[in-house]
Length: 174
Image: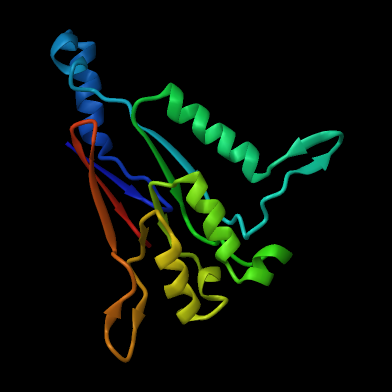
């Protein structure tokens, strides 16, 4: 069984899923239920180096500490969790601008995403800086459509594949 995770769009073969559901409804429950597995996908994007919670109507909203708490809670409660970031981690806060992404990468390392793809703001500090920041990351960064013209070098891996729940899981950077 293949589970394919695109960073911006999650696609499943619904016809196969519907056939399995219909078979379960017809009484084939015991055979099919043992093969079903639950996968929890957590996703964030457009953090833009803005990590502090904000007070709105006397309530705290957002913030990386709240995000981290939620990710850890789900990871502790569920077996099969993928946390994916769909880009635009950089550019937006004073701290991120001052340290040109290194502070953001260090915080992202603590969140420990399973896979990250590049957004348009990842190149705001220049390609050399992005290559440096990629080396500082302890998480996989993938991208399927960024090439260096002079060398035809594909920036980062376009696909990340790993086993989860006894299934092959594939992430494709877009």
